[in-house]
Amino acid sequence: MKGVTWVKDLYRDEIRSGFLVTAHRKRVWEIELEMLAELERICEKYGLHAFAAWGTLLGAVRHGGFIPWDDDIDLVMLRPEYERLKEVAPREFSAPYFFQTAYTDGGFFAMARIRCNGTMGMVPEVDYFHQGIFIDIHPLDAVPDGSARMEAIRAYQMELYALTMEEAKYRHLVAAGAKLVIGAEERAHILAMPLRQRLRLYEDFQIAHFDDSQRVHYYSQEFYPTRMMFYKADLARPVRLPFEETTVLAGAGYEKTLQDFFGADWRKFIRGASDHEGTIFSPDVSYEVFQAAWKKRHARVQ
Image (cartoon, rainbow, N blue to C red; front, side, top):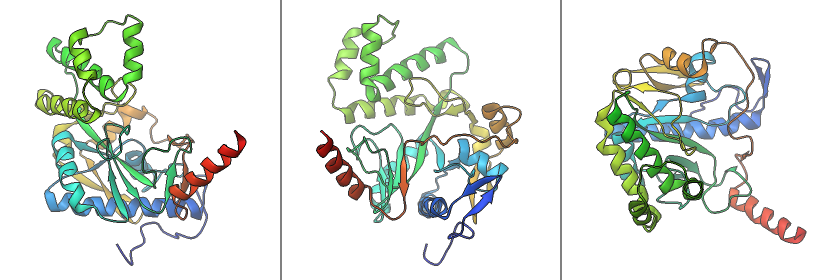
């Protein structure tokens, strides 16, 4: 949005909570908030909701913005709304923004990212998908409620995810003789599918069971569910929280969500590490330029 600045004192270093926040980091944040504004424009148009999660939710409540050492924005969407966003994204997002999924960039995760062209938010060793500065959008799926039926569904969900996005890890489990719920014949059939078809199978399964529980969370690529739980009833009552010079959406009961995930001392400032310590960020240099230089340099070394 032209003429709008989302981060105060954008071009000045400052100390926040005893941590140096450089102007460079602020400019990365600014681009991420510009992408958030574009996402929220689209969400409003289609009646969708993207909620702050993990460090973004903690930053909103505890810091009124980014955690000083954080470098990205994490959002979650209920699975049906997430699928609707994927449907409209190709016609709604335009340059400099790119809506990234495993369908656009093979080998990517079963989540989405909005990327910014002409920038860099990349892991140097990875060169097979768009690596501009990004914000993350994670789909929320049903959480087992303790019943035998839901536990069986969860076991199938996890294996289906691994077959889709963590094939090498899954083959290792098979070779190690792990107890698995998907039989050999069905497993072979799924593995024979192209990645897109496998991913669609996984997504359809999650949609089919979305109404089976009142709790939801994001299933990560680590073959187990993350611990940040959300209640559908809370997300049905969204609230706005200050975040830098704008706001983010959260579900009612967000303090309990933070306590359950981060522990009773979640308000205490404890310097943590970014989840993207190996990622290089630049608001000025394109990942494509960096990749070309990286490859050239390593070709000489070899």
